[in-house]
Amino acid sequence: MTSDKLLRVDYLTPDEFENGGSSVWRDVLGMALFSGEDTSFDAVDVPVARVAARPLGGAPALCEVWRAEGPLTTGRAGPVQYRASRDLAFGCVSLAEAEATANVADGTALSEVVARAYGHVSQCLNALGFTRPIRIWNYLPEITREVGGSERYRLFNEARRRAFQSADYSVRDNVPAACTLGTPAGGSLVVYFLAGAQRSQAIENPRQVAAYDYPAEYGAFSPTFSRATLVEAASGPMLFVSGTASIVGHRTVHLGDVTSQTRETVTNIRALVAEANRAAGIDLFSPERLTYKVYVRRPGDLAAVTAAFAAAVHPVASVIYLQADICREDLLVEIEAVGGAGPG
Image (cartoon, rainbow, N blue to C red; front, side, top):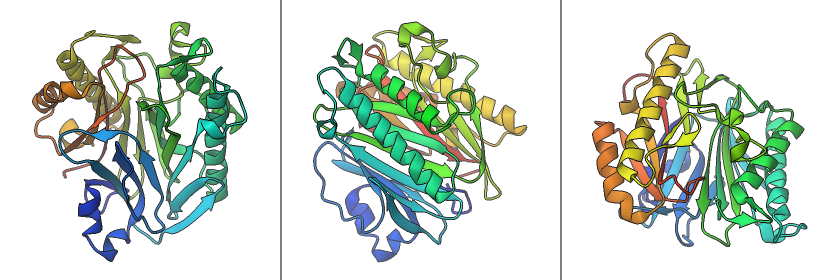
């Protein structure tokens, strides 16, 4: 993505980033650091979401660097560290369940930290003058483990829904794009987000049931996210594609077949891109011009996923691969994307 767009994102190793010199920080809105182990990284005043998701394919750590035109201001709102321009904000918060006052054994500690995290996010955005996030990333330890008779992801969805309602955010239709991935046991809940003053529009996939309309078999509280968000601004439209998987309707397809799941996931992303172009009334976006983040459940599947993805999206502008658990045990891969309109 080029510098005349609303945002741009780069993926660099910590060494590549730090070797850029002091000027490399000038337009950094915020960062996520993906690493399977503690990685020393001096981020100056920039908010950094530290995510325990291991990069696959070589690098021990990767930086997701969001850049925007300044001037940029840095601050804290409770545990949320943020950086903002007049029109954009990036923020992150990390909370450990061990610090909760509730009982870890029955899942109430998880519900408490989700409610606290999202409450702090909404308070931060209110203080900055933004109405709601446009894109949220959630990283949840042991996402599919059962606790207190319920799966942790379902407990997360209930707490997130209640937090949205408490903040007077919509819980259906025009909700933010999002993803929720699983990280190893013992870590913290990590949430990071982008918010903007620009007009945004939720995009749903005609091949899938909207996540907020899932039937009760997936839990009493449906996931609160849209399949994608189209952000319209004078500086250029952008499309944020939520975490997308091999789901048609509301059911997982191609059980046990990681190659077919990867292809189906790309088919869903192509449907979202087409729907975004239809909503915009013009062909603004192309799958080949998006930047991708691919989550692989089983590291041994990397070669198959890489081959299937390269065949389905060619040429690929930019893609990274991370090891993470997906929100359903039968899903082997999840893909998200972001991109601006036009070439590059």
